[in-house]
Length: 342
Image (cartoon, rainbow, N blue to C red; front, top):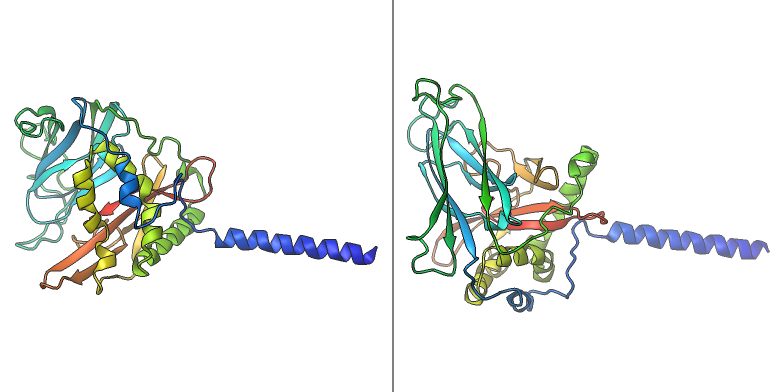
């Protein structure tokens, strides 16, 4: 009888150890792919989501011109572009990947003082001359020849001024934010973060530790050149972009070379993963890490980045955006948005 009890106890302990080991071994980022995705087959799998062009395929682009400020643009509370450089013009940027379905959308701009500039002196605060003008247009993707000529202006917006009509409304401040609402019509419907957990309700210290582990895991995949895992984790993000940006097969195959850049350049290595803080976006359903540096080239950018030099001597800097969410019913992250220069 004692021997039987000891055997049962030992079995339970072994099973418990196996369960704990499996829990510990579970990676911090997982996927929900229905097929096995590898570096060799991901493009062919993605081609299956390409569809013929349609008259309903509208692409939305914003452009901006600004004066005496740096800026950050968010669509539906997700950063899509940061302009912390000298200059005043932002060329048209497609925002479709951040539009999940037709209906009301938001575009938010955040303005910061130009504390550091290449030419001349920076300013500690937003000035009386600070201003931004934003234009949002819709273009029919199927009419490529006349798309620009026939585009429709959705929004033309200028930042507010004081009653004198000249002085910027937030002159003297360190930060200004304004949100514009607009309607979009798209022929697709993406899940996005609509079925994700509200991360703002979790313990924030635990969420930070979990996010740091996920970033370290993703960082190591790139440094160790684990191509299969990299493309497997980013597959759903790629599919959403193909659908929302109406990417065709020709363009998709051309993207492959850029996708594999950091794996094919022998000397490419990431900079240390450091000096960052956690940020929540997507109304609390998206989490990421951003650099805390005041250097305009690094401010608010992804802490996963690296530098290299091509064989012809061209110096290249790559930033890897990684926006994570936890789908309802799961306890691990999945990649919602990935990309460069964020």
